[in-house]
Amino acid sequence: MKSKWEISGLEDYMMFIEQAGKNVNTVSREGLAQAGQMLQSAMISRCPTDKLKPYIKIFTPSAEGDYNYVAVGYVRDIAYTPKEIAVLANSVEFGSVHNPPMSHIRSAVSSMRSSVNKLLAAKLKAAGLVD
Image (cartoon, rainbow, N blue to C red; front, side):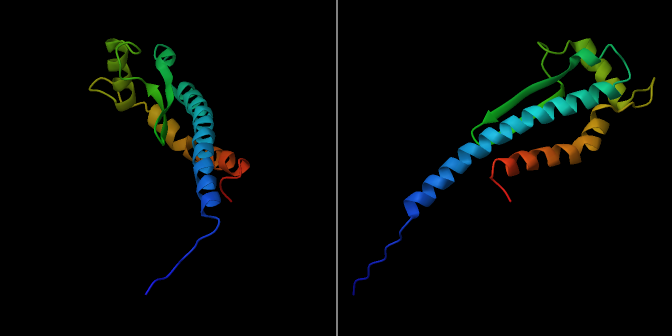
């Protein structure tokens, strides 16, 4: 017994999926760059000391294959953030025996979460990648 099964349009479908993947990466990276700027502004505006503000940076947006992300805040690298600034930033954000916590990184992320999600959804929708 022998059977034959043909599927038409599969090549077109596979090409569509491949192109959509490229478009999603491009659009999401652009959106993440904007989201990084939004988060950086929110963090700087909440920062209780001018000494720390110049060290709140956008590190990326980056892409590793299909994994897209943006890192915002104090970069954990001595080339970007001197040790004394990193210690001060940690003490300010989380508190110490000498001062209570004055969260500006975590509170900015919490307050901007909805805005960032809306921005990314709008970018994907405008590109025709989601409904």
